[in-house]
Image (cartoon, rainbow, N blue to C red; front, top):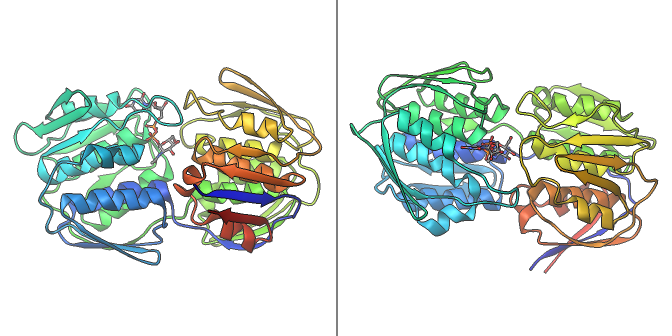
Length: 420
Ligand code: UD1
């Protein structure tokens, strides 16, 4: 079992190129199944979740290869429609393969991805929408058997009860090759949805309205391959900004998606950090102790503050002057990192979906265990700001979403080692 050893106390300072977005790359990799030809994906992050997606593609008959941060997927010879249960279980987002396989073949067999570190993650909205698109779905002790009654999904008018990212992606993936028009009302508006749609358009799909609440898709018989650059990872960007703020450092993020990161930039400005942006670049400097955020930080679907950045922002605010309040509205179990932060000296009170953070002047190192991807990143951030050494175990969670975090932190002058 590998672990991180972090020696706190150094201000992070330097330039860092931002990695490609995991949450864009995963649905785009699934989407390559719809293309009869080769897709070349640039800026593809090298992460364990991405390798899980490539194993699913391989098992369906695709050829998937990597060279540095470029992935090539050839789906000409797709000849299977079933994903084995053990591959489905490797990552929760494997469920987006359901829409893509259906779009390609009109049938698929997958399994329930199960709960995860963030609590139960139902897929009722995915299933209900696909049924409306003419897909017969039978659920049998964990297995999900799907078949388009007429061999091909048909377009439908759909309204989501909640703008679920995964359900919106699954519907889009099934609809781009469906028969007729699909309308998704109350669709998710996250930038990663727009990235998926831009990729699909580059492959010949007809989609409009992405980034807004109503997405309209006109099904095409076939899509073709393309070369596409995946957007940069706004959540990883927010993480390195948070680490810089927590250590009162100075950073230039390059390869950054500046407009998509605006919601974080305004929050860090409120804490007293100075921020300047240029084309694909963000400069941030934090000379003094951060100030608490006066307004409650409510996680909401885009364009609200993202749940994925809640933990890393919290890690920066635990040493701010004053009290900050978080309200987590997307997932039930998204404060599991707080126990580790408290072990490092933070003053955090969790009351249901609210967390009250009373800023403390300093933290101390501790031995902790990553509970989930972003929670683990928050622990690294707190460890960098703390006095003394910390040991962080269960870093497999962190590796799901951060490319060699220890190298990025070391490049910025932080003291962080991977052991084991
Ligand atoms: C995606 C992101 C994840 C992010 C989340 C919210 C990827 C790979 N993951 O996850 O990092 O935290 O969006 O921005 O892109 N729900 C239901 N029924 C459903 C579907 C969802 O009740 O059928 C609920 C979930 O339990 C959750 C909420 O809706 O409480 C949001 O989930 P959703 O937007 O679907 O998140 P994911 O796509 O799983």
